[in-house]
Length: 274
Image 1 (cartoon, rainbow, N blue to C red):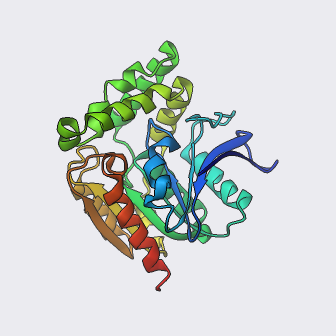
Image 2: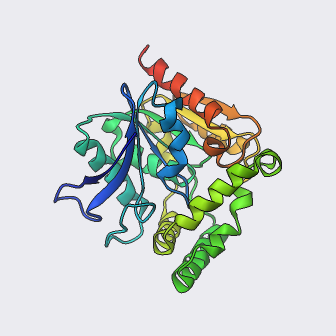
């Protein structure tokens, strides 16, 4: 696996570089991390689970991991345009683009803004709907706390809810690793992401216009974006496959990376058969 900063073209507003982890060869697959993590959540996938079959590219989104925040106002469209710039820098016309939770929101924004760059879409433990007023207010409250305190303490309180009951009972090492990633998250970047998610539009009306095949993945024990929401998402997409990861929650990609990766690899392989 290589780790490197990708410089943006001068015409791209925002950060100077997007930090990227890349491994493997074959069909390009860009996977976007959940909040409040970084591309480190894809470590096992780079260690052969996906990279043995695909060219796996996983950036740190704005203000996460080693990617600087830049001057732009909070907006997930900015992150989607960053991904398009990353494809340009990598010399790729098209790729499978997907993400988990917030990464899924960015993937949906990418599908809306850059549909011609998609060869497939992966949406995992995420949803198309905008936040409710209550959820939006809570995000803004958390953003203010992050900015005021300068630490991710408030985010650590929610880590147990990010995983399923099985992980909480049987995978203490996984829970500890997720907590470690949250502690690494820059507070200012996390606040920006919360404000960007609070401002995101409803992506539902655009789902019918997604022309490429889509894979919708959900953890069986996800209580944040539960399986019924994933079913609604898959039904709204013209050409979608719905798969469930057993005994996993909202971070199924981290809780059971082998099962998650297997679904992605099979989905990408089927694209080559079309």
